[in-house]
Image (tube, rainbow, N blue to C red; front, side, top):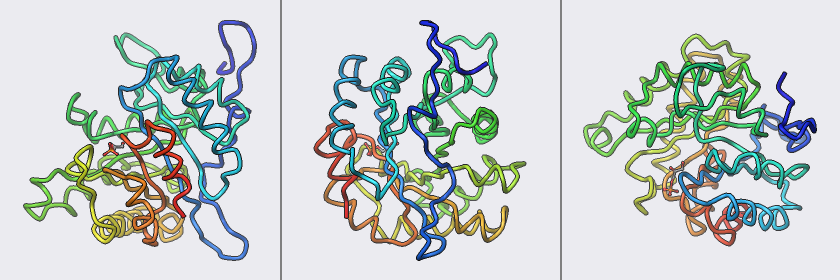
Length: 281
Ligand code: 13P
């Protein structure tokens, strides 16, 4: 049973945020993908800071409907943030998950627990997890299957390092991560996934990929989606760009048809910069 909480009161993440995981269809323009702006807080903000921050965001974003908004606080703040955002238009993501439902995995958190805490989304395969914890594409695959089974929307990160880009291996790396991460998924399962292209060399460096470079990689990813899951799945897939997204470069990135939103690190930690990104147009 998912909907329990220590205080006895039933907690339903769907009332906290009701987000359709599939792409938004504009009735006047078929196949328009609704943008997603997600803030990955990484290892920042205490519980008190997190709650105060999202109360501010909730007020600022009350009228926003041009994009879906997601925040990914650290594990310790998930439940409190989900409570503070209950009934709002801001969804809550975890930054990682384990693939098992429960078990002897010290320090890990299952998707069942994330759902229970009020999450609707989970970031999987972030390059910092791949680098710091040696996460593999095979583990990414297991995690995302577990997230899908729990009806969490996986935001799956892929992207090349500087060495790989300079060696001309960007496409090969994206192919490897895509096929490794998404193997054995059905098109139906794939339709719930959001992909984030985050070139490792652009993360936290202030060195953003140009909109054209990002769009080029997004095209590669969409072609991979088309090859594996069919044209319709590829058209519906939302691909976010991440890596030094700031208020002054978001409009240029979003002007690219291929870019369906952003996964924002540092600039998502202050209300002014995050709201400038959310209100990019
Ligand atoms: P920055 O926006 O701080 O470069 O971080 C990007 C990122 O890793 C988001 O997941």
